[in-house]
Length: 435
Image (cartoon, rainbow, N blue to C red; front, top):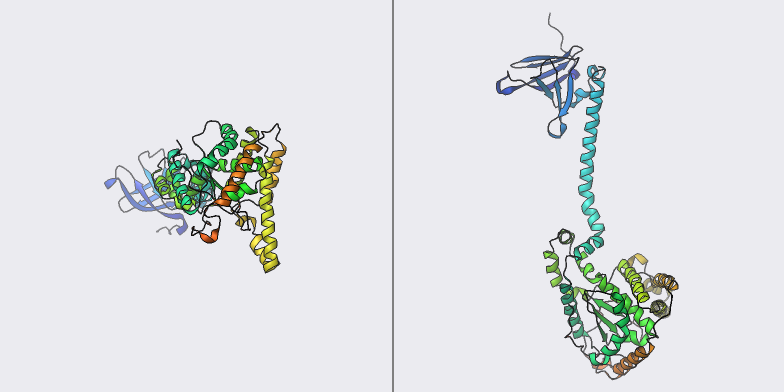
């Protein structure tokens, strides 16, 4: 009498490998019973007892279940049907319980690893983009200082076309005397710093890569002490030494170029920098860069024995300017317009809120201990020269000049548009170069 077929859930498509087979293997059907494993194929039939049978997983991505037995060392039966791991006969057999559990756990681990790798492939570029400033700082290390110097000099030349610079013979002696303590406090540095006074009616100063720092004449005229001026200059020097300008360009050059530079191939970044001078004229520093420049500027002031309270005092003037602009706007256009124009949410600002910066700098300055340098004499002399220069400069009367607008000058502190005292400059000596 012919035996009834086994239930379909106990049948599995399989292959058998044995030296007696043509080409070494054949396909067929595997069934499981209480006695063991039976393989039936077109050209062969094999039986492996359940007792002492060994199950293992292998193959590409552990997709196959292998069945072996010490009685038939040359025979291997395997199936890709993983439901066999849940076969009622097998999971109830005491000799196979542990091996089945190990195989199932290994499969789970393999899927977990695969999932983790996929997530890593997604998360890595995302993390790279979200932390582009950090990686830009690493990439900048591949850029020679000489490239920064040339980039800054090129940008300075473009600014000199737009603005009149104070003659070097009038400004250099006093600026060098005033800034000497800061430069000495830097110690060894790859940069040679150059300071210029530009005829601009906004309260501002900005740093270009390579050590070029431009001070608006209005800032000098508004400063009431050497400490206020040096507080601003220490902040700008920190932008140079921390390479903020170059890092800003690198971060905006694209994640792929940044990645290439991080791993040592800076060719793409250097090509980008070669044409980046115009970008510097409209670049604003991030809130993180501004805070960093405040903190590093304070460290420099402290080393130079300059009262850091001057930095906070000058930023206070900027706060007052902002308040005055808001009040004037409210009087002319109403409170709602003043709110829109003045109370920009912090996350939309390119600089930290002035109030927060002042509070932070005051906290740092409170930890400072004197005595402090007295630089009021060269400061007073410089201020007198700037005032005389601004009064007699050819473009002191804006109505008689065709000078291009100066709203493209970098705004690394805060600018205001209130009516201010006249000021001007003429081309500075461009012969000095950074090393």
